[in-house]
Image 1 (cartoon, helix red, strand yellow):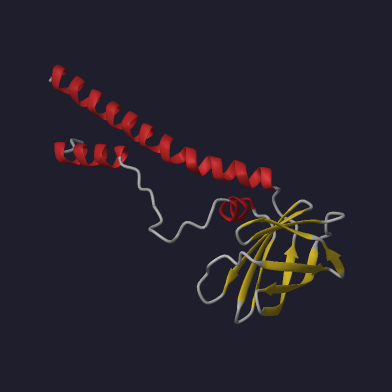
Image 2 (image 1 turned 90 degrees about the vertical axis):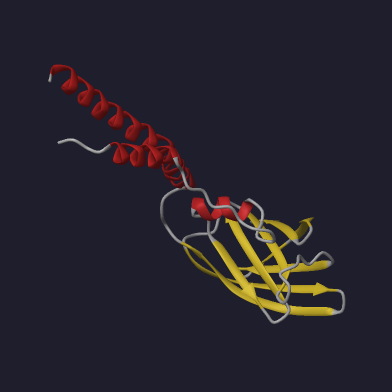
Length: 178
């Protein structure tokens, strides 16, 4: 079977091209939520008309991001108190709209209620949410899977080029013998 040169060129073009997505202006949300989401870390969202609180649990460390609900801008002047699964957690500021808390012990599998009191400027609000901790692959396994997917975008073009090279070599050999 003989394939036209244009088909070889199209295959070569596909093999050398990798598609990537880039966020536009205003869509950079930092790397911590993305990394943790990829690793399957438990997370929650608690919202009100004024505030939005997002939390990420990695072991005993709870990372929190507090934004104004209307503008998605970080709340910089906030005091945050947190109650998780019936235990009051000390919360410390970790940057603009970012907070951290340390749990006394790792939470067991299950759904845990969470309430947060936010006091910022003249506003005060109570947010409620749930943190669902379930059994699943460990973060190490999820990271390995993510690495495998990233590696695939480099290995696949190499394999396609190798296949293209083999087919081209066979065609040249057939021409020489004919």
